[in-house]
Figure 1 (cartoon, rainbow, N blue to C red):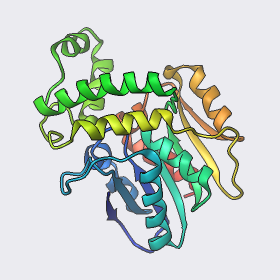
Figure 2 (cartoon, rainbow, N blue to C red):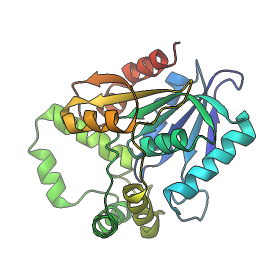
Figure 3 (cartoon, rainbow, N blue to C red):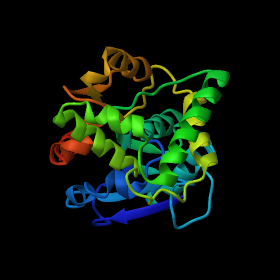
Length: 258
């Protein structure tokens, strides 16, 4: 696992967690300049998803422990904020529920927080890892996906294209990622439970609810977190981050009282 840092080391610390199988720079490179004026930005690059090291993503809990160790060693166990993009929201939830470190503002970025049993999770992980690995190796999405994109209205198509860019697809920059890392990350996220009714003193849970994902995700946030601060947007999954980065940064500052 690698850590990339930006901004004034004396500013409030915000830690950024990428989404499923995402490269940290593709996920957050464009928005870090919007944050480093106000924060000491710490961006996590997961094991298996950083081209500077030869590693395999282990599982969610092992990676969470490594993140906790970093926060303890470098920030005395306490940071101002954490933002989890998609799967990154699972890491934020795990960090809060385990209570090994303290986060003042834990921000869940329209994460689905899906959970599944072992057999179902293995089937899903096998299918997804095969598909994503092929896309990473070829540096492009398959023909059926391109046809599907072309059938969408232009505004919606632009959103999906930006999401593909966030995954590092449409280039070969993710060709270093091993299939085992993809499978381990996807599977362990599904089978690693987030507790219900999580509440930690002096920690505020902020959830960026993308309304177009459906009400079941709002219900899921309220199930897992006690009295979460809901920020609702008439958008799709992580659309605020990928399509409206300036507004996203303003919402982050609002969460942190800046």
